[in-house]
Image 1 (tube, rainbow, N blue to C red):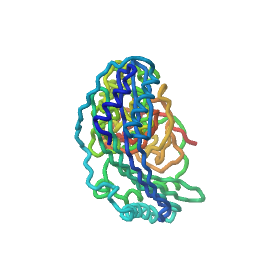
Image 2: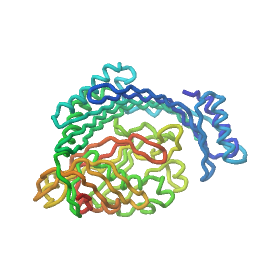
Image 3: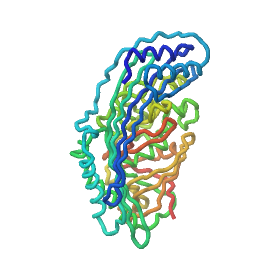
Image 4: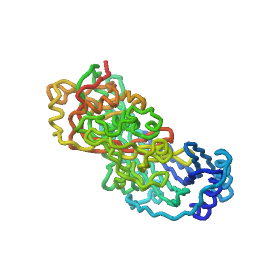
Length: 460
């Protein structure tokens, strides 16, 4: 993308006013998507994102400049701007780059860019038509097939010169069902760090459409959820979004380094039920949120965040690690060259427990089974959250009963992880896009079936 010799010269310019660290992050990304409404192709979109960001540190000061001109002259001008913004001083670093080959644990067999749009449309149609044909109650189905070819180069004053190619593919099917004049929506959004081979064994387009339609039809015929404090069983896979949002963001150095996290200063403390172990692992082969190395050139790793309820570590990037006096954990990520890197999650999940899944449900005399979670909001400083339940069912006398809509879960992250008192054995991951100060990035959330002994359920 950019030669090692040019990167060395650019980094020398970047540290010319006394920076003690400098970094080049360059990218060339192709985003491709096909959108379909009710069986007809609505649009085919291509977007190219190309440019570079140059960042310099001096102590706890940080400056970043960006450019779309990745010629040597353009990069030198960008480096000069960053250096001058940092202040006056003399160069103290010698730059010598060595290429690093981290390896690739995410093999791609069918690069999406080499597949004809007609073949992609056929996959998309399979998902959309499966949803349309599921029930007469289905009134509209939309679908999107997207693939991303994200090529990056990282060069730093610490001698790193490394390139990576990240290919991801995702199918999204959304269905709208109508019953008795009221509509409800269901959706399914599987994705992997894979090419089109994802549809051979990993993901069924037909099952994706049926899942979306079934959820829409079920919820369209449901009554409203009663409100109150009660035990709640939360389904596996995307149910892990509660840990991701209510606790995961509070374990990122982005907030911990400034003391604005509910878990700041609590390393080694018991912060969760002893049954709970939580992990952020960027090394899962072909997983949606996986990386070979992070956006600062630190190798991906498996970080055990909480072990048997005890806080073991945070997710740390280089700059916030300076403030904390802690080493980076392979957690630095950014949406594109236009964003400043900070600590983010990759594949974050609650590990499997030892409780029988059937016993988790049968242990609830009266409560809620949140089979599938939706979006919500959280305050990382306090951990207070509010999440929608996309698909929920009342539980009576240990049995799953009628579906209910309009449910939400309200609480505080530090409380909910203490109240998770049963953890099942059916770990699964769900795909999402996580937004934070460094933009929107692909992340996996996950968990097995869990029980929260007591939580506030919003409803009617």
